[in-house]
Length: 278
Length: 313
Image (cartoon, rainbow over the protein chains, first blue to last red):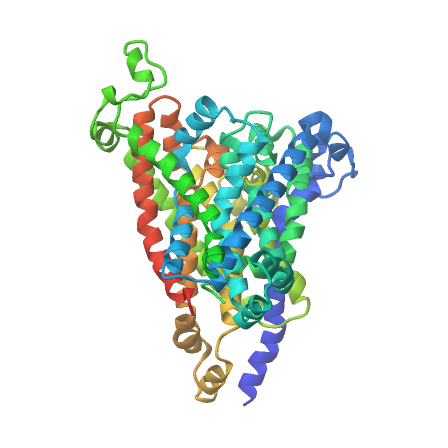
């Protein structure tokens, strides 16, 4: 059938080209941000320097001076890391219990956990402000941000871990029990080494979500615990006088996370669909 | 303590934490939604402290439903934004997933580039798009339109065609901070960010498609469109439903993008309206919050059912 052969030969060239064009188009805004970050603020808004300009590192070198970047970055690192650690510390035992010792209510509990994730944050904005500001006096502290980030990601963490743990044959865990290994020993010496990949990608994904969170980190902080989301939102730069420096600080804020994201793109599906798409 | 009790107790910390996290703030919202509670009032200073003696019944709900100026607008606008994003991401996501699911040179790298927007933090996404891309003067939008105008101006110098081009209007770049257009900007930037998510999920699902069935269809002479229509699309029905529901939940609570694009000028959704009420009228903010919870729940019930079905298999 020559007709089929012809179209497929054409397709062999056309489809890859189209796929690459689309991929590059989607990446273009990120590329443009990185590209602009090497222009001076003056060059960034001059049409004649749109593509050709003298690259400079000054935007990156002045990040601290212009935006106090490291202060916010350190807050992001601290809050995202500790929130992830706490989510795992609470989540691993819970997922272990649900995967290997399920009761009649386990399924309901899991579904209920997920439903807490679906509450619109804005609905409890004032109570959270009121509680943390007037009552507990933890407004704008690292502790509060860590706690909130941990809680909003806990359902996803438990779900992801649960789907990974369920793949481990129960007999292996049971065998440990026969040998008189304690529950803690089962988790530490049998489960975590076996599910290491799953735990790592759960942690990675949780870290990314914490880092990118932009509602509570902005609303529940002023200066002390403000993260990169707050820094960027506070510098939306009307009329773009500072395109160069804004691009640099934005690149610094998202760069590491995009790279981390590349490593866990497969796990993302599991994490965000709660194991419903395989 | 039996051998099974301790392992089961291990889920208690997580359950208790999530229970507190859900019940306390939501309970307070419910309480505030039934009382008169404002942050500043010279005339009625007693309203500035939450108290049962300021009981208002369903008054806040009534106020929000029938008197608050932006409530219906923001519901309508929330739905407009969410539905538009859903249509764009699902259609684009399907097309792109089919496109990158074939093998071609450099596929791994192309996929990585395509997925990247999903990991950009929302604040950066909004700042990047509204300033450097969509700005009508300094952004690429403005520069492109300026370039087109420049081109037309040069073309008018041509002998015969010049007369034709001189009749062309001077184009003007669209401003996306304006009242009517700021929703479009939000739709664009969120579509850019979430299409990769749809692609990822559809791609994962496409890989589990029954190849033999497909080959049989080819042998039977089914054309590509009917193969897509009758085999691939039914196979993707569930992932599509899941993409729609997960995105609905996320996009019903969009905030950073709306704040950065136009500070809610002409483009509010429920969370934004709640934020505005929160600057003074806590009663109304809480009643609106309860409406937002109800709206989110309608979507969530369907999602939870689907997830629940696949849970134990």
